[in-house]
Image (cartoon, rainbow over all chains, first blue to last red; front, top):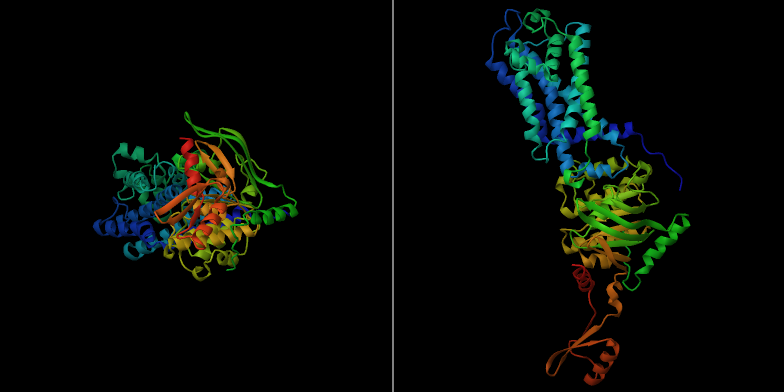
Length: 270
Length: 307
């Protein structure tokens, strides 16, 4: 028998990414809850709140819009990924894949591709809503576009890795949504998504600053909102260097957790 | 779909064709070799010294009650579980160190269907084809499992039996040398089960080695060249379905309706008894039956002894 070459991990990874997207977009409930929820929140909070942030001349609704784009990224990556992987582990999908010659990396490549595309989609939806209703403007200079791009990519990468890592925590697929939504909800409220971050009590600010969502929100504000807002930022600076460092640290931690704790089987199948 | 019905009188026929094909391919004669396999969970020996040889081209059925070590053994062979001790070789490779290349030569049909209900039959089969170095033709495989009419249908719209056929399609898309079938027809209606058997017979005829686990004794009898019974963590007997447990030579029971009512005679020479009865009744013997223990009788006796 002549040996035929095994297909490359990248090729299978791309094919898995396309499959994941196809499945996601055909699941109407998933589309509505994952993509629609942040949009609904944007509408609600944008309707409730009025006025400007301090005396910066920045519309508070635009401040919220930038934060909700950040939390939308976390929703399509961390929450959605964590839940689907936990379910795939519980229903035996992962075990079946493990029994084929599919390279393990291809599974993660596929998940990452799907997360990137869905986050992009989510960001476009939120941005269009924000600009139509609350006058949110696209990045005004090439430098701000660059900031937007790297904060987006870093945010998606970090939240994807953490979503894969946390998928091993829920004991079953059913409890996954509950487990995943707790950190997501808490982080949204302590990271300056729905409030001006500097208005939060300083203890809460310090806790929020330990986690990535605060830095992704701040990074997106730095790309989308004018520098007059700096007066209302805690450090009176965009802190790009610190943002990069915190996200890199979480990225490394997430990667290590993925590599060391990922399970292809249920606990009882070990 | 062309199907070949093998008569029960020639249970060796299939395996012989398969073995010849394997020999012509210059391959080793043994697909699975297990010696003194052990698996401990805590202080429980789930598998306690299993020995097993499965030849290339044969259909081997592994029978055993739940908790006998059957699933653990299969999962070790599939590379899903680590063993505590013993020697295992599957297609010449230690499944404790699975490689992609080795996985490409296996097909696994797990106990439960779990594929994405939003995908169509063709989409999922075509996707899995991309994992293998030399996959079979997607439409041919869909035809082989009898789902050509449903190729464009989403899995959510298929019946349980049809979804099981998708599982088999995913198991054979890589053109495996060895196929694991774990309780493939649980929950089937009798008609669907028969049609599924024909599919498996077709695969066996093509030379695929098949390791089947089942709780249905008629299924093992219809499909398997050899049957192994596992109980208490070890293989208690291996034989052809017709010979297992001394079935072929066991005492026969001849029954008929005599003048005083139903008569039953246990005998080692049923032919002679029937000839005598035939003379006595001068032709047709009323309500004549000749029975030997069924595979189920033999099996239940066997697992009963180990309890």
